[in-house]
Amino acid sequence: MLNDRKTERIDGKEVKTHRSASVPKTGKAMLYPHDISPKHYSQFKIEPFTFINENELGFAEGNVVKYVCRWRDKGGVDDLKKAIRYLQLLIEGEQDEG
Image (cartoon, rainbow, N blue to C red):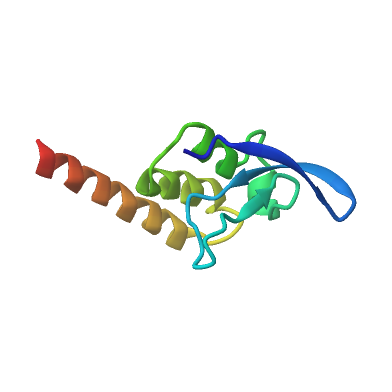
């Protein structure tokens, strides 16, 4: 899935990158360097992006992780409400299948 990594030279520095799950209309996967990250994510020992991708979480699960991690430093209670909404979607999906 997102485990294909490579080292790329960006601004004269070698950085490890991931290919994004979303492919823009150009057909090329976007690359996200590990060392370019907002403070509300880079403060963690494991950045949410890396955790989500390494664990191959789905879209809804990944958004729960993202919003719960950043709520204090970015979106406040609105981010918690967004996390709850994604949890509700996961629950609804499980109940529909069950």
